[in-house]
Structure formats: C-alpha cells, structure tokens
Image 1 (cartoon, rainbow, N blue to C red):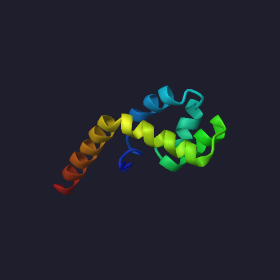
Image 2: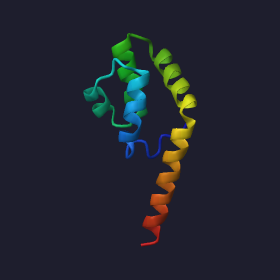
Image 3: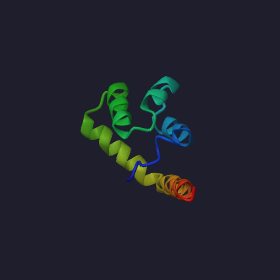
Length: 86
C-alpha cells in the first residue's frame, strides 16, 4: 500500500484509524501524523504487541480500506497536476 499523500490528508484517515485502534488517543493520532512507521510503533506501545503483529494489523487495515487509499491517491494526483499547470 502506498502511503504517499496520507500525511497531507491525515485528517481523513484519523477517524478510520481510531475506529480500528480505539486505545489510540487524539494526541497519539496527532503525533502519528500519517506516518505508517509511527502508527505501527503506537500500536506496539499501546497494545503491547510485537512489531510483526503491529505490522500485520496495519496491513490488514490497509487491505480493508483500499477504497480510501485509492481516493486519496486520486486527490493527490489531481492536486499535483494542478500545480504543474501553473
């Protein structure tokens, strides 16, 4: 899964992440700020799981939210095309 553009559109993802990992607070989500490795780390820290388990959870979540990732990727491409036309 490509996380390009997630940082810039993190506000769209925060609620989905919080639904999946309810132990993550708004402060955690603000610190994660769309960075996948930070999400994995916070899952490890707050759920007491190994890195491999946290990675598997994030991969499962990514797979179940492919439509959201596709929408974000399309928005980023559209934005980048608009910038090139200037």
